[in-house]
Image (tube, rainbow, N blue to C red; front, side, top):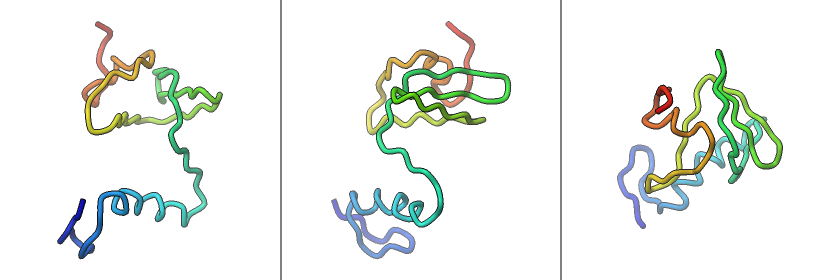
Length: 91
């Protein structure tokens, strides 16, 4: 679990290293969403809308889907359009 000699960090462990960016962000006036469940991706002309199970909706010009250490299907409608980091035509 040890991480050593990373730039600006002499020694840390994985969970602390992963938690440091969130701790830093919480110093600012921003909303942090932990473990939201995405229900749908809706492509638009200028923005992509991400609809969540709790009814919240976010809009962005860019969406990054990070599912963890192993690739897996999330079964979110519209997911196939964005695989590989770019907007792909429907299959």
